[in-house]
Length: 227
Image (tube, rainbow, N blue to C red; front, side, top):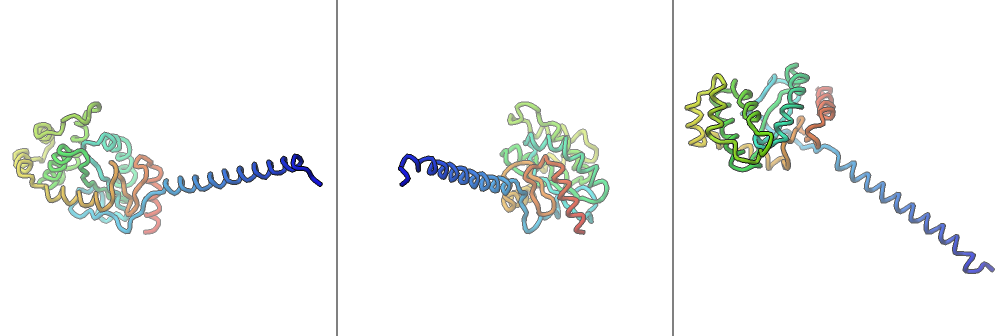
């Protein structure tokens, strides 16, 4: 007859084996969850860009949309690093059209910047992207949360850009003439569950990491192959 003491090592081996198996299963589940969370989000449709500022061939088969905020420092960096590559590789070659939708995550200054941009786009579409770029350039590298988007700063920038009627721009700001367009953008921000800026969509797919240009290229190329 086997004694109790002789049976203990066997039980210990069984217990250790069960613990190892349980840890392995837990790691597999955790890895699966992490990989799921790394997937880009796909919507049933892409944001409508009719009436929105747009660059590129209107017949381009792929649409890239940025949800951005003029007060957002990450948006400024995206515009300096990723945007030029996108324009050079895909927009200028006629494969992609690019559009921008305003986000108002930083309150009244975000709203003011968006109202100014909408006014410029309405009155002088050809001046819009230059104004867009210069307004981001005016964002300070430090203390970007401080007050810097003001009527004075907007008019100062506008005076340097040919084609902008600064008197009309001032009237539009006073009357909030672009409010309907800004509100339309706010509804799109809510509809597409925008949580951070910049948020970048390729056709109907939202990139998890807007700075992952390789992933953006992969999505664009996949969409181009399907057309």
